[in-house]
Image 1 (cartoon, rainbow, N blue to C red):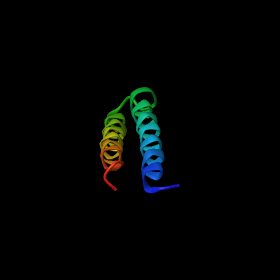
Image 2: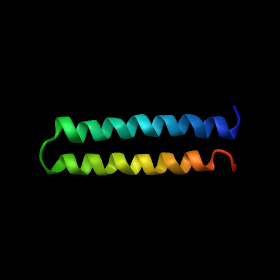
Image 3: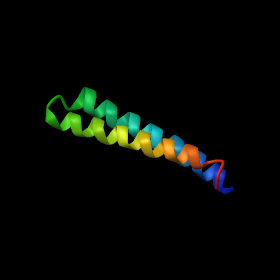
Length: 58
């Protein structure tokens, strides 16, 4: 496995974890804690976007 493959897998894992956190915030926690879960999920999407952008450059 080269660096691009590892970054691709890391991107997929980050997207799945981000979706899971957003789903927890939307469906499980209806109070203020749900906003925190959703915000962290969006942060995971941002990091996955950076990983995807780095995929061809490393």
